[in-house]
Length: 86
Image (cartoon, rainbow, N blue to C red; front, side):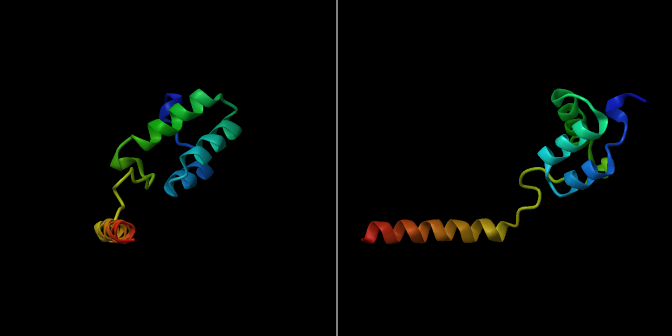
């Protein structure tokens, strides 16, 4: 089994599940004693392994609630209206 196919340390898997990629890379470096580049490649490979990877990581936008974006847009428009009015 290639190193990139081996499971990450449990603490790194947990960090990825919480969306903390940099923390996962640091953990892999410490536990496996490898360099930054290798650790990043291992974590990135695990992140992008697909839905069967079991990491629980959602990329940008996958967990966004559309209602939050609408409310944010309304707040920005209200602020712009207030600034233009004064």
